[in-house]
Length: 250
Image (cartoon, rainbow, N blue to C red):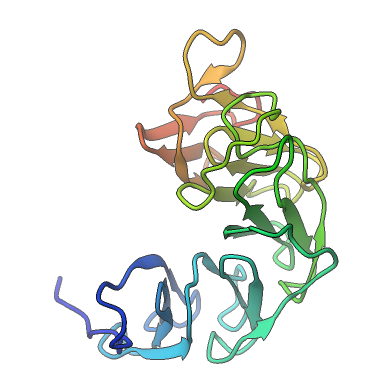
C-alpha cells in the first residue's frame, strides 16, 4: 500500500482532522473525505484531491446504489448533492434543531434507498435531545420525529440532561427494514417505528437487571447485511448482537 496525494489544506489549519471517508459505489476511483477544513474529493483514487466545500463536516454517505446522490453533515446542518459531491445544497428541516446542536450522524436505508435518517446531538436538555429526523427523498427535506427521552445521557430511562454528542454519536438502519433504527451515544437505543419512539437497549454499567451491559461511548454502529448481526464500536472494543440488536442482547 502506498501513500496517496496530500489534501490542499488551508494554511490557518495546523492540524487536519479527518472524520469520514466514503467511496463512490459505481466509480471506485472517486472518494470523498470530511475534515475540520472541508470536504475533499478525488477521482483518481487519492492521487490528487480537490476541496469541494469549506468548513467542519462530520458524516458523509452515498445513497445505496447511486454514484450521484450523497448527504453530508456539519455541526447543525445537512446538505445533499446530486452530482457525486461536486456541489452541495442545504437540506430543508421542518423544525430547526434546538440551539446548541453540535453534531449530526446519518444513515441511509438499504431496503428503501430514498430514506435517510439524521441523528442530532446537543449539549443536553433535561429529558430531551435535538432529535431524530427522517428524509424520504434522499436528503432534500427532513422531518423531525423523536426528541424524547434523552437518548444522549447516562441513565437508561433517558431522564437526565447529560450529553457527549461531540465525542460519540452514531446511527444505523436495519438492512431489511427502513423502520428499524438503532442509535447510540453513551448507550444504545432502538426504534421500530421509523424513529418516532425509542427504547433503551443497553446500559454502560454492570448489574443493571434485565438490560444488557455494553461498554459506553459508541463511535460506530454497523449491520452485516449477510446475517443482520449488529456491530457496535465503542471505547471498550467491538461488540456484536446476533439478533440485530432487537432485544438488547449484545
